[in-house]
Image 1 (cartoon, rainbow, N blue to C red):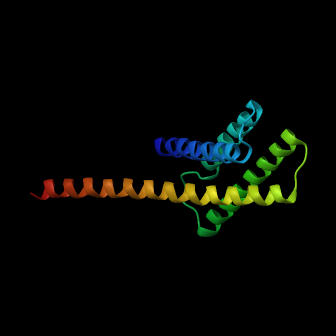
Image 2: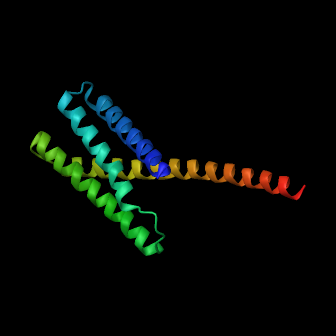
Image 3: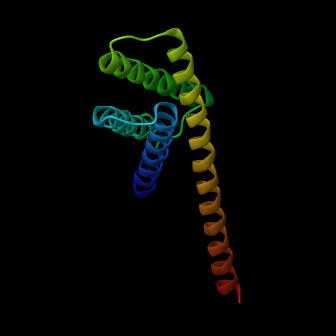
Length: 136
């Protein structure tokens, strides 16, 4: 459970920071309602990760389906937010948002993979130390 909460917070921070930076570099200033919309999307995007990936192990097809479902839900949430905030959506906006979502998705997956890999190495080191102590 602690691992899921840690991953949820890491995901939220990465998404929120990236979206704020993209918006600030694109438009210069940020109204508070845009910041709130970004915070809302960041929170629910990270919460979806928590909800879509339970502790059970699944087949590769099920995992792929869940990841595609996650991307589709995030895109729908972003498009809905854009329509609510600005009242319109353009094909260019859709393409840019899709590319941003995909880039963030792969960056987050990579960072979480590296974090899990470091944790696994740490656990293996501890197990080897314990094994050496018990055999000595």
